[in-house]
Image (tube, rainbow, N blue to C red; front, side, top):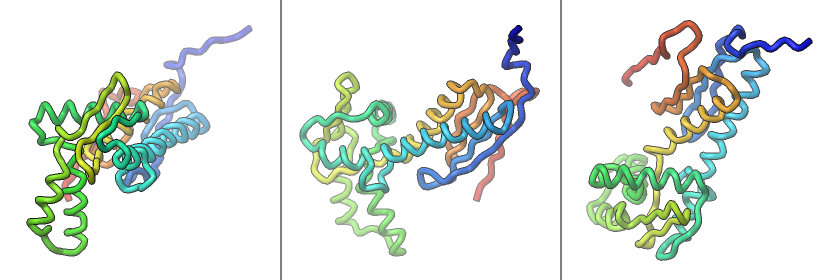
Amino acid sequence: LALAVSPTARTLQRYEAVEPHMGTLAKITLYAGDEDEARSAFQAAFSRIRALDEILSDYKPGSELNRITTAAIGTPVGGSRDLIRVLAASQDLAAATGGAFDVTQGPVIRLWREARAAGRLPADDAMREASARSGYRKLHVDEAAATVRMDAPGMLLDVGAIGKGYAASEALAVLTARRISSALVALSGDLAFSAAPPGARGWRIHMHSE
């Protein structure tokens, strides 16, 4: 005689885990039936974040983002499903904001990183040169063909403003697929969460300023 037990009848416990990913700390909070279930869910979710970092990182020379940036000058180059989704969404945001959101500002962002490390402002001529290699209209993403093409040599893409949010959402999707119905994934300031904790009306989010 087999006794079927509804998942909602389980006693769920709160579990938390933190790992360094994407240049920050990734924190996952979830409710599971036991420690083994929680540990397996954490491993799967963090694995997804780790895989996306290998695709979307602008810091890692071998990331797919950096490889396609070098290869796609003047010719369409195929990209993974994740990269194409992120770049297509980025271009939609760029068009909707008139370029206020622009992942092609990699040359400008890199110049400011170097200037901050040196404790000085970027030189005007360097800013003009970096800006000339930027501009969302120089990036072309074909979702149907899953290709990327860029118009100007020396372009650099930086998806930091959207990549962490995408990774958080994808990690949450992994947890949901594993029947973890109450979970929160936090990647720096980017949050993704599913149903409220057992017995609660919602997730409690603490905000603070530095």
